[in-house]
Length: 501
Image (cartoon, rainbow, N blue to C red; front, side, top):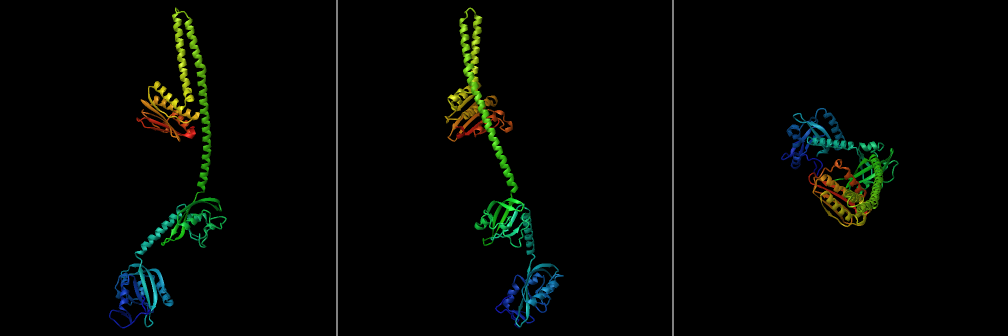
């Protein structure tokens, strides 16, 4: 209740003024006093009597203003609190300092207790009379909000303490301001009272400067969230920590601290290292298996080639010579010996049939066109001959490819051979199509049909498909199968050109 004169004006004028025991407030001051939203009472410092109270004070106590005047201020307090606050009042009178704010409870006229916050100050009126101005603020509505805030803070503190991560609050001077339970468990010797420096407290032995990749330093510098993985030296040995640092700003936007969330990933890192080691061992074993498989396939193809050559160069020629000799023998027999003539003709026909079958075996073991004309011509010949034998309508669309390794051309030929065999045996198809294409990066080979399709789940595929997949895998490629029951099948093999050439 300030004015140009710190002493209250006490005069005998009664018009527009509030007067008691010579205390007169000016009409302007009285108007402000009565209309103030906070509860205010003027108390005689010597007697403790309430000289005047504003409307808000009377409303707070559920009574009329005139009912308060002349009452001792202590009657406003709840039972059991009057003596305690009378001591505060007496100390205020003695020291003439500002009392409060402090919280207490007052009792209304109808006996209800109301939580309030009290401030009191001694002032001197004109004539030397000492008064106490006491201001009360109703906490009825603020208390639930404060309780809710306190509960929220408790829940937040409980959450932070039980998340399993270390949380620390770091000042711009790199001092540790707060730690959650996990951080206190990791660093039980760090006391917050002396504001310890983080890079000295969280390392054993202590560091003289921040870590080289300290995310807190980076967050303080640019105001962004930073993350790093740091190996920390502790009393229990080196630990690997994943740290995420987030800046904390005040209302003006200035960075006042950094929150560090620390996750101990030592065991995870150890597990990852062990897993990486196992994966390396598995990769080496797989490469060894692939090399062995390539050698097996290569040896198998070499054996096929050798058998094909021997059958072609020896057995086939011997059968040709045999058929010629049998025909010469037939010519030397008398024509009258018809039975012998017919017997020799049957033997000649059988020899020719055996030669034809050997040629077929030779082609299946190792098609000559594959060695002499290349993959494109060999596939075209395979499709033509297979269509004649099976009755399928096979359309071939090929392309000349760059020089392929013997393994690549042989593997692709065998894939088509196996795929067409599957179509003839299982697909119940009428048409099939084989396509060979190369775009400089990838060599593609596809075989599709209009058959009944099948379930392509790994558990339902046979050895033929697995063999095809293994051949393509050895060339660094991929084999895909697109099929649905009743909608045909498409098999697509793709190989990097550098692997095939």
